[in-house]
Length: 125
Image (cartoon, rainbow, N blue to C red; front, side, top):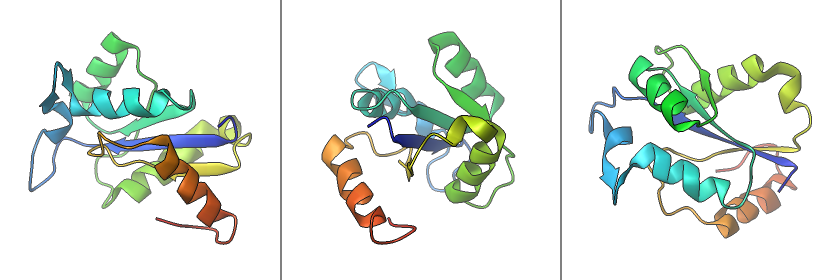
């Protein structure tokens, strides 16, 4: 999937489940578990983050990330900013896929189904 960039928006201040990205699944925080699931089928994975605590974790664990404004109303806004910050680094990708940070059981076929939809439409969920 070299033509695909997966961006995972992460924030700690969710109203329904604060600190959800650090909720443990096995021995890993959810954000790391989701990252690992996606990196199994593409090396083009970036976390779009806005919290210092998440940044420190990413640096410690060597996870790719882009810092974004903490005031974004949605993960899509966070992804938009991340793409702008990546600049020319994102021009090599035909697809940009948003994988939510609370989707620990995402599979490659889910991404491939989205890509099929994107052949017909500019945006799909």
